[in-house]
Image (tube, rainbow, N blue to C red; front, side, top):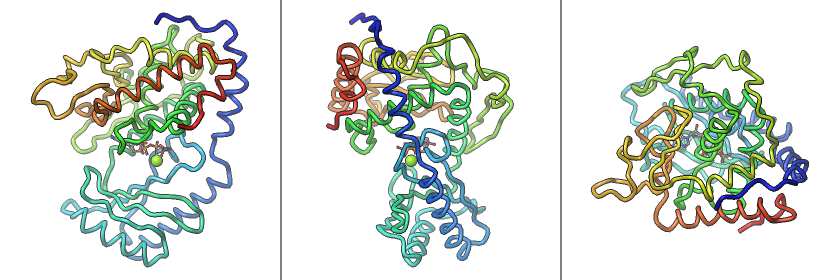
Length: 332
Ligand code: ATP
Ligand code: MG
């Protein structure tokens, strides 16, 4: 469907802005997170004095919303570390420290220990020597600093995805990280553009992690107020859902923040449903740093249908509903 943005869309702007503000983590919550981090530093430091803790994910990338979990990477200088054995030991230390629901999940690509802190109510995942997310966290945070509308749009999209039950990689829908990348790419493709492509610019930040060279422009303060696009938050919310409902070419295109454009599935070898392929690639989003990863690979035949129906529902609401700021987030 070719739809044009409703003429009175800006009527919704104050409402979306109000919702955005209500989603921001409170000072009190940030203080509780710091308190939990200090407790963890003490527990871990007593056992492994050389270990360091680094926070990543939504607490650090500026796309956190109220009640987000805390993602922590423990770094320990030991190339031969048996991560599973270490995480089991860590789980025992955390249990002794009176943390609740402590569970080591070690049979996954990224093994973790998860738990809940009863005194703050915060849930936390700890991984070991897992450095790439620290770099993608910085990349996302640097994008957020370029234009305030990215954070606004991404928080609205995350809130929509959580409300509608389409933000669970375990249930074959997309992760928060993936939705944020979809928002960045969407703003990179606006005309006039809202976000530049930091990885295509002169690299002022470089690091190599797991053999992957990460390089991008990170002096973002020098290019704030980039461009002349004045679209409002409600126009962008309308545009985002309209794009994913009616314009994205699911069959052929790969969303690529790394290049600020779309790549072809053919060029990546990610054709939908190709034989002898590990994944079906019903929707493809390239990880900006580990470009061998399609973050959409979790989606299957059943969940792509649900996802597309949800994008269409959201687009229709943004088009026709008199109060899109309410209907969009009706819980599923
Ligand atoms: P939420 O508020 O929902 O917890 P989040 O930003 O913490 O959002 P998650 O999807 O929980 O998002 O992921 C946490 C972090 O882990 C991300 O910010 C990202 O740095 C990293 N991450 C998640 N999935 C991947 C992945 N498939 N590949 C690389 N890094 C990832
Ligand atoms: Mg998280």
